[in-house]
Amino acid sequence: QVQLVESGGGLVQAGGSLRLSCAASGGIFSIGVMGWYRQAPGKQRELVADITSGGNSNYANSVKGRFTISRDNAKNTVYLQMNSLKPEDTAVYYCKVFMGPYNYWGQGTQVTVSS
Image 1 (cartoon, rainbow, N blue to C red):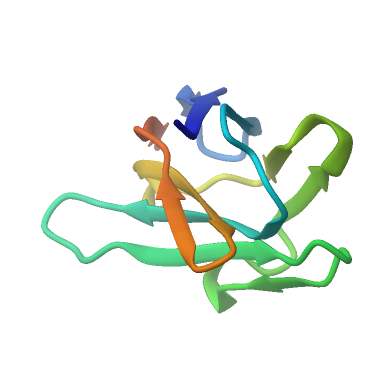
Image 2 (cartoon, rainbow, N blue to C red):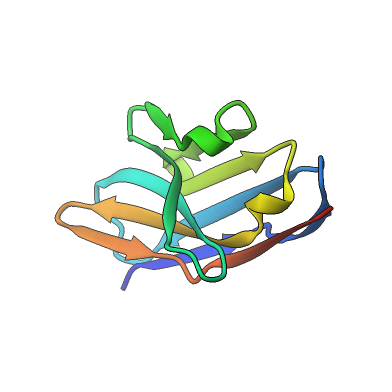
């Protein structure tokens, strides 16, 4: 059974940085796109960034120039480096991984940015 374990969330002051990690394990086969989503209270879950197996990345306009997504295919892990954090970045961050016709979600990690 595929499991996604996220880490790296926490509380940080505005302007600070955090690095999220999401490691996939169990029943792994042919990982395709890996991505990060977030959901703030009272809002819909939204795409933050995603990256293909070949390294092509895509970002939400709100995080361009501040966040960087990367992946280590040998470790089945995707990362999200978040710099210049703003209070509006506060949310639960989820990783999502596509494998063939299936997709899997992580359990979420809280990121809180104080002003």
